[in-house]
Image 1 (cartoon, rainbow, N blue to C red):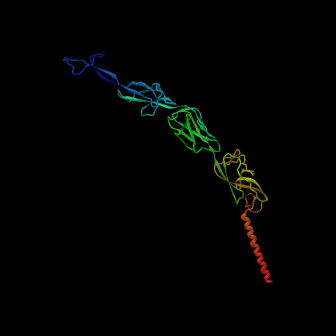
Image 2: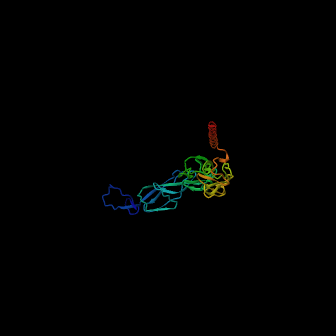
Image 3: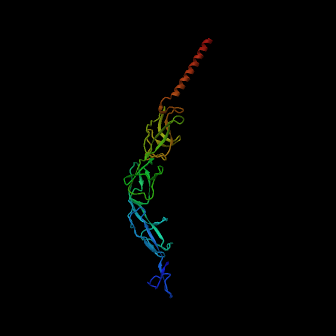
Length: 326
């Protein structure tokens, strides 16, 4: 832990003895030793100002000092790190038996993080978490849409009132991230969470016909819905299966208050497509009515007319044949 500082004429004090002196008599020389020391040099890393170097005994204890630099705009001092290492030491922490040699220079780097800022969400139908003030080296939050909505395809971010683009955003998960040491002011995130849409296929009759609807999640009626009808039948709404299941849509086109897997609190809650089947009661004629909403199907009319024409021709042919035979 010591290094030779030179030879002197006395054990304490004295004068340095130089080689090549002219004295012809014996000389008694005393070695003088100095404690081995290294020097700590401080780097503001983006801050401003200066701090004096610190001399530390190689076998001694080093105590990390308080910050003497001016912090970068929008940042706070959190500690020190040795050059090339990631560990951060707070002021007052100590190190012992450092692997250094006499006169070695050790660089100590100031570590800054974004100052205490607030995060807010300026869009519609959603929120961000965290939404309160925080201090961090980097910013991570999640955008959460309200029920029956999804995250926007794109968002805008401002920091300290200015447009900011150095962020990542996942439109599927809503994850937003700003990298280390980039935070310099209040963060405002803007983007409209748009309604989800769903597709419902309605089958008014078991064998024929269907209608498709698409609407926004969370609505309580189907836009453009018209109740079906059939001769002698009483329509009792749309159900989850041909065999009954649960009623999902009333005869008036409203969702029932709750239908497990389909509707919650009168709002559509199934995240996907589905097919629903009409339920009928009453004195139904044999076979299905192939005409949605009770209208006359053109194909059926054509078939009936054609059959009547053929029958008329056959009857006329037979009558003429009978007349000729007479």
